[in-house]
Length: 182
Image: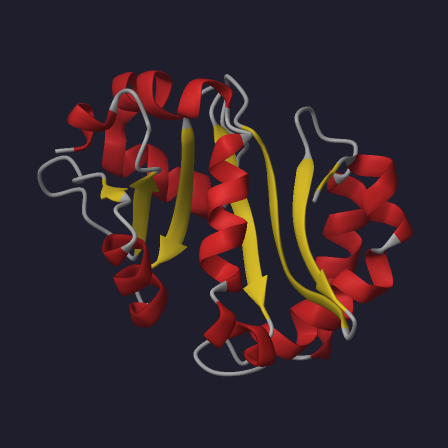
């Protein structure tokens, strides 16, 4: 199910609960303060242009979710975006990322992982991307997540020479400009 800002806010406590379960475990080991920051971000980012969430629900509640928004023309001044921009350079940021659907969070509860909930969420997320243009930045230390994206056919964008850092940028399998990833 795809939800937009106001609908997501009706489910904020359930989403925070799922986030806490997933991200308090290794390799993230997030604490209560980090979880509260997610709560705050979710409430504020629901108004962001192009915001949407894809939810997986069962009789036990929310099994997983993906949160995304459209990438603005000018990347916000954050540490992650600065690393993405330095790796790709302005031309590739513009052609690959601007206006594309950016996956901000993907969280799947342990109980739902064997059922392929993460794969299903990513599939729904990509279906909603403008012209198939979707991407995700992630930490290289999330080795199992990095391996999963590779296995699912996502295209790792190669950094410019000597611009490699601790962030990996992936383009969705159907991204029309994936040839620029190499």
